[in-house]
Length: 236
Image (cartoon, rainbow, N blue to C red; front, side, top):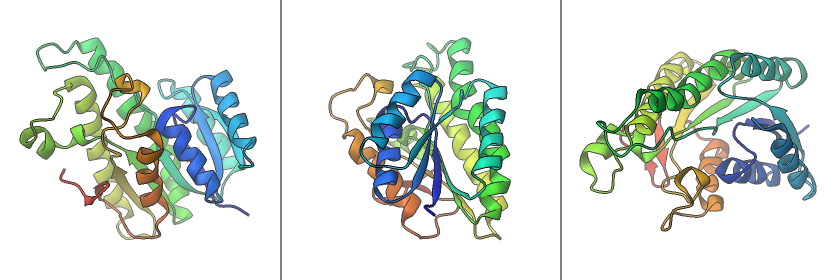
């Protein structure tokens, strides 16, 4: 039986490529997406390539939807050993603290932090019992070190703050896993052309970004509590 992975936000972009690469590596993939039609189409696309992929509806802004998806996994896929929290949203991608609107900040946190928190809290016991892995997909701009030291840092406070909070969640979860064989860590794929940033020029391809995530998720090494980029451990 193939190992089972659940990837959220996987109907397009880095999430879809992550699901594709896991499938090509022999994993059974549960492809999570909010939009049922788009999720089913994405899963069908990957199945047409001979991959073992099933669609699982999950709306990261909807507590009931998250609980339902987690319940399906616990009942139908209890052998799950990999959760990749890829789903995310930019808020308004504000350009400064002063320009940030509270509504946009709350919207970013709802998906990037609270929705991910709910799913992680529901599935962490299963991952721990299966000695599996949770990867929280992060961003360079979640790093306070990067934001203070880089001239290339984008001061998008709504998005960045929600992802920095996600990094704190990663550390808290990793502490709980420190005396087990399960692990939780964060990965930033770096600047990648996606719909989130309007497919901005200069970013790496979705395939390259996904390869960084999949590489760390499946390399068999112990990364518990780490924040990783393409070159290795990244500064918090």
